[in-house]
Image 1 (cartoon, rainbow, N blue to C red):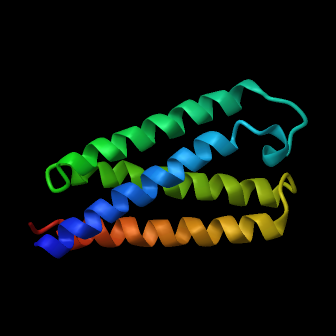
Image 2: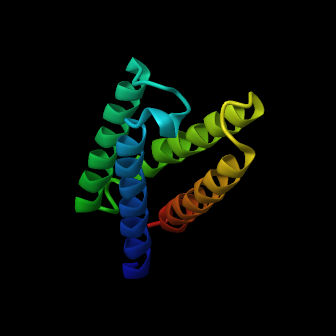
Length: 121
């Protein structure tokens, strides 16, 4: 049981840190492939930051709030798909999407493993 809580807590914090990084990175136009700040970048930053806070709150009661992992899995998957779509449209480089996809895959594996491992408790 204690090992499962540790996996949940690691999952919450890994995803939260990733969200905080995304919240900052999307505010830099050159990083997003545009020449100046555009409104959707600010929206994405606010959502990513808020999601990170939600994950930290889930960590306060890891087992009771493990349901937070389900929408987090969906969000991580959709962010990964947005990157693949952008690469297919030649909006970002293939090298960049490969490295990003590896991170998305690893985070998804951690989140799914943690959720499945704790569902019977």
